[in-house]
Amino acid sequence: MDRILIEGLEFDAVIGVYDWEKRIHQRLRLDLELGWDIRPAAAGDDLSQTLDYAAISERITTFATKHHFELVETFAERIATLLKEDFGIDSVRLTLRKPGAVANAQSVGVRIERGEWSGR
Image (cartoon, rainbow, N blue to C red):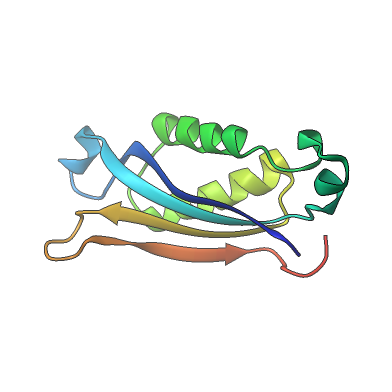
């Protein structure tokens, strides 16, 4: 299984468990590894046979502006589900970070893996 990468995608979202967090937008950072067979796209140099990085990035950013979650864990699960359903991606590995959420830590976050990584 090949992997398509989108790293360091940043967007603002309303996320957090505290009342003050529910009233502000906070910056989140996302790294994605998407299982996809790139051979058909490479053989024909054809964008329609692969994943459109821009479309995926835009979909995630739009989703983030329309939904509010308390937990980074919930947001990560919803993104993985969205990618599998909207783009037909079988396998998703993602790391979602919330920079500045904890004093003395650069960021906090979760890393999840959903789907099988062999075959397509």
